Image 1 (cartoon, one colour):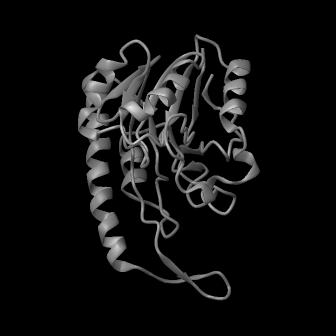
Image 2 (spheres, one colour):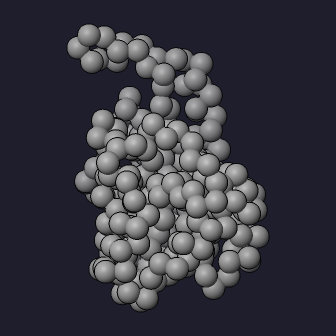
Length: 248
């Protein structure tokens, strides 16, 4: 029984694929079938798979239903966190999703999910992504300060949601935590953030994130050990559609 994670499936079985230019790399060709086969080959029904946001391009639950059915049919227990493109998922109605898909899928937002002696906690997260202005040497020389201030407000909201998740897990008696964010925990301007500070304050063992697509974005945030916490990027194209083993 192992814990795996991957993000950014961007399924669109019953909806329009937007931003196709961002997802036109050869790695995305037939990615749904590649991922399905990798799961069938490497996961069992005893394993747990956390899908770290951007599951579906569906604008509502009806449009996303076929995408969620695809996820449901994968081996093992499936836990979903919310991504920035998951329009079908109202952050205030996570409980209703858990009721609707009870016994089939679990939705992680403002709550926690137990895995062995760990609590899996999480939220969508957020980070400032520009726009930035670059000089001839590729150095950032300035950025949109108004957009940065707007980002700070969203980060504050997402930190409150992550705190809620941690507190629910603590109230449940858990002392070991793994954090799941869709957005990276830091921007390219940061070495630390509210998310890294909270992870350290609660003694999280790992922070798992996605969202960073394409080779130019893979190293926008933390990888490996940082302040005793393991940080992992699990975007589907980064992993070449092979789920990452988080715990044996």
